[in-house]
Length: 275
Image (tube, rainbow, N blue to C red; front, side, top):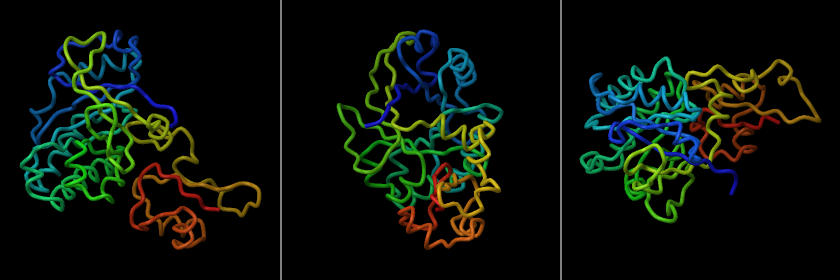
């Protein structure tokens, strides 16, 4: 296993937090609840305060939005309300769609897939790295594998291990953690992906791309090279066919060279080997 990162997630229910003490305790990142539901007045009342204090303490920050959506239209409205709440800020970690309501799961897998795709696609179109937060059991029952792979995945399962068999970027392993600077319990997380590096390189979540090569191909990369491999980092709006055309190759070759299972499913930040 590669490097992991220690984090927590918080909301108004943690009350006033001393993020300086949190940072000194070894926590590296915090995922902050931005709000819930579809109305502007459902923004978490501690979101602004938590965001500013966490940033000031030097913590990396992400956000999540708790969903009550009963329809795809409501999921779209929730996405827009979330975007309005987080705009103008920078986030080193993804923005997560928090799917937990039993009434949502009761409508089945196709419905849950549609909620996730509607919310996350809206976030991506607005320039954010989107993800899903969900417990392991409903994830396996109500989210298709191709949807789970499409976005940043944050799985909740309390105990000594996460039993989800697919790929995931973050694991919430406890809801009863104790951290200096927070009174009472707090959710504890482990992240397995260096999201800050990927997000900054891709120019997402309020950041400008750290290198041109991370966002678009350079002129030189269009020329054949026998000694240097050429890779392209997928950005928002890209398709495999457009990338193939840009590099004068074929979709079939890109699919074969990169082990892509579905040519219609590529994600922001994905590295595509051209040669």
